[in-house]
Image 1 (cartoon, rainbow, N blue to C red):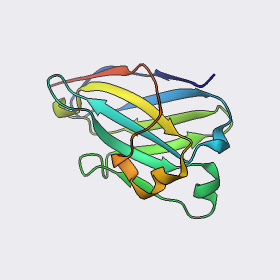
Image 2: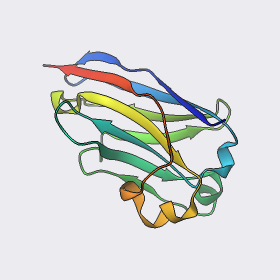
Image 3: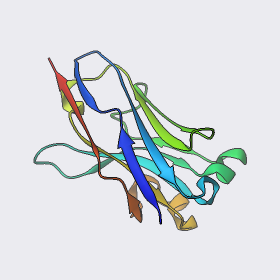
Length: 131
């Protein structure tokens, strides 16, 4: 059974950094897309960063960032630990929210990027940035 479990959330002062990890159970190289989303209080969930799966990355697959994440966030896969990670730097209060790890085994996701309806989701990790 597929399971995604996030860790690494917390509270930091504006300008600080956090690293989120998502432990993935299942065969990593069967994923076509993996991504991080977030949801701020009272707002809709939004995509933060997405990467195409193991096989796609090795053949030139893409990494996509939301404009709000460009230059500050880095998405990556730790193949040894089987985790999807999100390094977040220069955090601001508007980055506050619940962060979700997600993945898809449908190859169509590569055409939709962060607009894709991912099938598998973690429970979320809270990130709070205070000024």
